[in-house]
Image 1 (cartoon, rainbow, N blue to C red):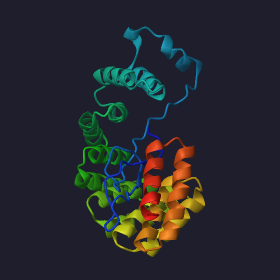
Image 2 (image 1 turned 30 degrees about the vertical axis):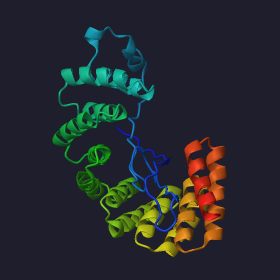
Image 3 (image 1 turned 180 degrees about the vertical axis):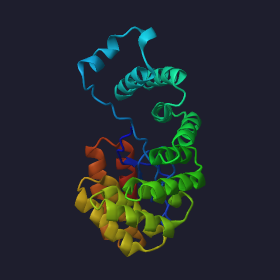
Image 4 (image 1 turned 45 degrees about the vertical axis):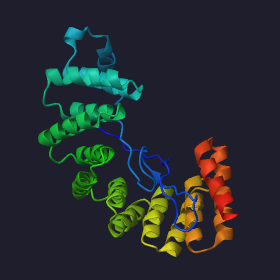
Length: 290
């Protein structure tokens, strides 16, 4: 019904390090539009099932009056895959009119609404899924994402917790709950969640980067650096991790290494077309070399 995927995005910068005016900080997230060092999440798009018979392949040729709820639902999934979220919602609406208990239509309409930034509408759809299918862990997971997008991190934590209860081997739920814990300034809890996510998905560089951010908030700078080291070992083009490692080195008063990391981050940001990230990294270099 749903497919989970991840991305990493540089967040906006808001903080200035104490003692050195002008040094800026960056963290990463699974969606952007957030404060510095405030990881968030990404919605999970629907899977489109391939037709399995000639009869199913002919369904798209039926007149509208003959289309079933499942026909309209499948067409909605096709619209979604084509990034036509408004068209997907229209088809899910029609499917629901025919079958008001078609839980997947509500779930995928919720995802489409989230893609259009209608998070309140998405939550209403996930609420309906949960009433129809109370053990659907993806509904709790995606509702948690919508709550986080609305800055309701307590509700997000509750939903990720329920998702974990139903699917305890899902690294994404731990990762996203850790992100919400960071927003609530519960850094110890965030570290625990990131650690569990790493146990389940040890090759995800983003989890190490975000655990490093939480550890840095706990002033465990050497542990944070170890996590950033692992992040760049897994992804040697991870500009944000080099940037964040530079900040940790700065806190340890290792200015030379901090400058080296900021320069590396600046080069990567420039190569990746991230002008803002490049400017921020070079600003830090200039401040530290004054």
